[in-house]
Length: 230
Image (cartoon, rainbow, N blue to C red):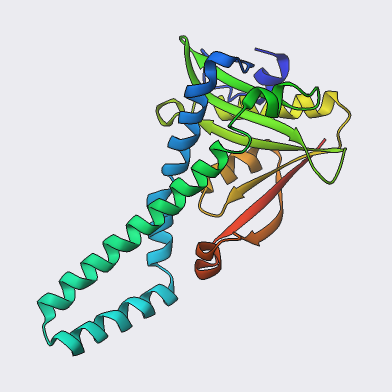
C-alpha cells in the first residue's frame, strides 16, 4: 500500500487488500464487477420511479381505463400486474443496454483505453488472490488539467473495508503527479452511498444534469458531477 492509500483508508479497519495496476488476466472479472455493480442499482431505481407523481397518475389512469372497459376489478388488477411486470422488464432492459454500451466502449479494450497512454490508468483491488474492486482514470476531453475518475466498483461482499476510498486515492495521487488541477466524476442520483464516500474524501458536487435518454427525460433521472480540487 502507498502512503496516500494509508492516509485515505479508514483507520479502524486493518486492510488486507492491495491496489495494483490492471493486467490482461483481470479482463473478465473487471467487466463482471462493472455489470454486477450496475444491476444493483435496478431495485432502487424502480422504487424511485414508483414514488413519482407522474407515474402514480399514469398507473391510476390505466387502472380506471381497464376497469371501465372490463367492468371487472379482478381483471383490472391482473392487467395492472402485467403492466408493472412489463415496466420492470423494460427498465431492466435499459440497464443491460447501458452495460452493453460500456462493454463496447472503454471496457472493450481496457489496455488500449487506459494502459497505453501515460495520462490514463486502471487499477484493481485484490484480496487473497481475488479481484474485489476497480477504478480507471482518463484525461478530460475538454481540459488537459482535469482527470476523470471512471468505473469505480467494489464487490458487494467487500464493501466498508476502505477499498473504494483507496481506489479513489490512487486516482487522486495519479492526477496530482501529472500536474492536474482537479479530478471529476459522474454519479447517478440514486447512488447515495457513493455520494457520501466522495464527499467524505473531499469531492464537491458541481453539476446536475438529466440523463440523456427517454428514461431520463420521463423520470427526470439525473447524473451528478463531483469535483476534487488538487
